[in-house]
Length: 69
Image (cartoon, rainbow, N blue to C red):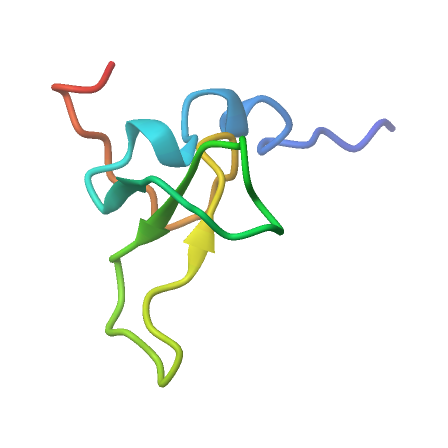
């Protein structure tokens, strides 16, 4: 019997760029220069601030922002 992965295609509709917690950010950092990045504000910031994420990242806490789809 083949195991079915229910999460296989979920990431295509749950990307950070469509999430209500995603805040786009322009970066001058050498590490990510020329790439789109943002901050995830889903949870409280850590000592280093909010986590940096790429628009194509995804997580299980995704909450869709209808103005971005």
